[in-house]
Image 1 (cartoon, rainbow, N blue to C red):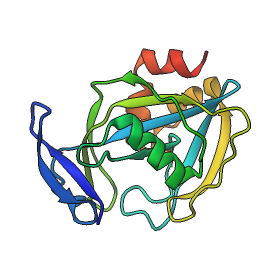
Image 2: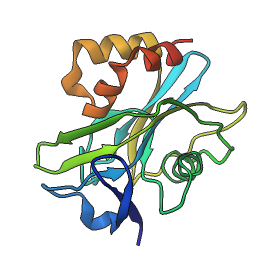
Image 3: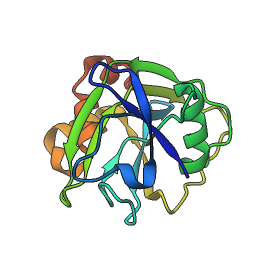
Length: 177
C-alpha cells in the first residue's frame, strides 16, 4: 500500500491515507511533486496511461508523484523517475516552484488537491528511458519554446497542472535555458 501525506490548509502534515483511496470527488489536500526532465534544450513530456484514475490519456510534464511519510521530495523524485519513466540514473532535482499548489477536477469528477513543489532535472548523459506502460502510454522530447507555445494556444490538450506550472516565469525561464 502506497501512502500519501495529508496536509493542513497551512501546509503541515496531518496524517496519511492510502493513495488508492484518496483521489475521489472530495480529495483531501495532500503533498505531491511535479518533475520536468530536460535534455539539450528539450523537455520530456508524457501522455498519461489510459488506465490512470485521473486525467487518463492527457499530455503532461515528465512525471509527478507523492512523497511518502518522512521521504524527502528529492528522494521521491528519483524513486518516481525510476518507476514511471525508467530513469535509473541518479537525478539532481532543482526545486523551481517550492510553493506551487493547485486544485483541479477532471472530466470524471475526480479531484486533485495538492501542495506540489515543481522540480527540474537534467537527464544525465547516457541515461535512457524505459517508460512504465501502466503510467505512461507515450512520451516525446520537445523544444521548450514549442511546448510553451502549444500550451498557450491549446491549454485544453494538457493537464491542468502543466498549464498552471507553465504560467510561472521561473519555470519557463529554467526549461528554456
